[in-house]
Length: 153
Length: 153
Image 1 (cartoon, rainbow over the protein chains, first blue to last red):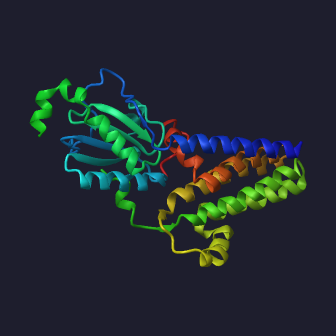
Image 2: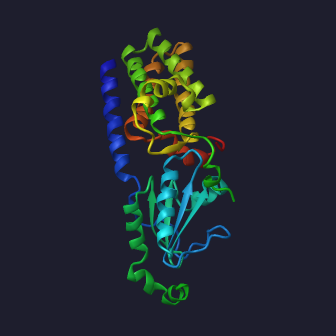
Image 3: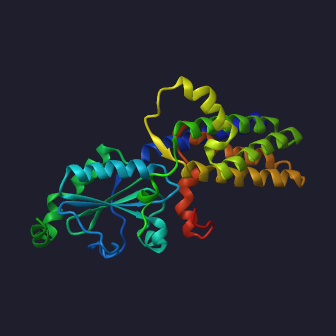
């Protein structure tokens, strides 16, 4: 009986661990509710990049938030059109609820108009950051509002 | 606005220490499960819970598991490739304390079956931390904050 409990718990741990590892930083579709229009929730002083904006939601107790901030910060430093902002979930818990953010780090990827085009949860690798950027610069995203996109450049 | 970045410079630790500590803790919790619903299991679970008290008060590096890492393991390894903020592992210690503490309190009040059950729950969390680097409590931090279960760390 005791042995069965231990065996079951070990299997459960392995399954949860593998499932979690696979989902780390995976680029998923946008989840912003409403019309999917430009982000009106961005705090004051948070400007949009001409190509894409990473808005990272972090918490003090979150270790993967640090590595993710380094990866996205380096991407923004390399690419002049990309901006990275890090927000603390403590500053506005209601906002995380509205944006359907369940865990940290969660990164919302905005296109040049501020529309969420993708999001990533968990530690992000440089390859995943590039994959997310590719979604922000798709042609259909640019044709949705060509004037604004042109003005930004 | 305060971002986690501002607090980043203080208190960095070798990220491998807490993971080894979680591995040692997981082994002890496996023994608790094998001992079953009895006094021996309750005593060992109490030892684990007291270790979590140390970790909650002094940080994961201040536990006896942290001492084992620094004294016997760290000298045999190369320098750390990555330093980690000490607060996420410390929060994980608090989560471990709550889970094992409930088991100890119930066990002391005669509900001995709670001892292997609490050990099983804590084993999953410690095992995930040791093998996959996943901090279960940290993943659930934002949800617990949103639901008002815990206050700001």
